[in-house]
Image 1: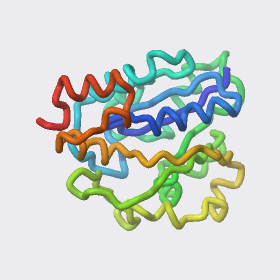
Image 2 (image 1 turned 60 degrees about the horizontal axis):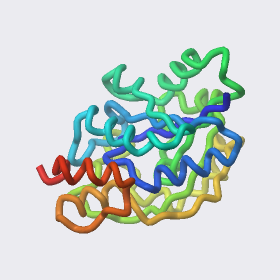
Image 3 (image 1 turned 180 degrees about the vertical axis):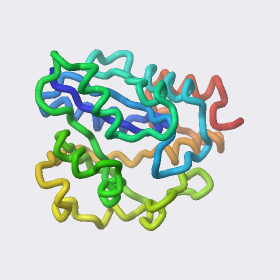
Image 4 (image 1 turned 30 degrees about the vertical axis):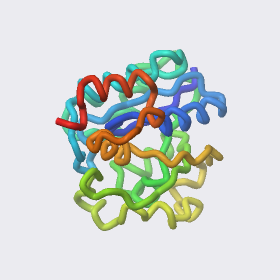
Length: 218
């Protein structure tokens, strides 16, 4: 079985995440694991939701596609979520059925800071790095996550001008030619909180969950 991993806060998950994962399947992967972070090392979450709420939204988003699955190892592990630890865990979990290296999906907003990740060099060797494009734009600061630590030196638009081909850690990376969907979790949080339309930016079940629970209006 060929497995790829797409991690994130998923606050909330949206159609851009799903479209990106669908593109990954086209590269021969049998399953894409969506891995909600317990606590990301590089940012402070805006409008922090409980792990249960974020896992529920991911579960609702992927339940109709047998090739998509929510993986809760980072939530169960607790503390700061490091991709290195997750990949090591998944290699053991899927030992015996795993075919080749695990694919690690990285969005453009993370290109410029990948070298700061825990064991970045070893991670780039252990995994097949899959680089997915996405629009990088300035967003409402009231609803944006805040970079922390060494990551704070990089602006939110750093990825838009960073050439991944110049990064040695990406020398063996796979480049996706995915469609650029102008949608972000930040935008959805802002729209939901402001009672503005966002129905078609997320799966229908996720939309209902957000609206019924007034998730971002609390």
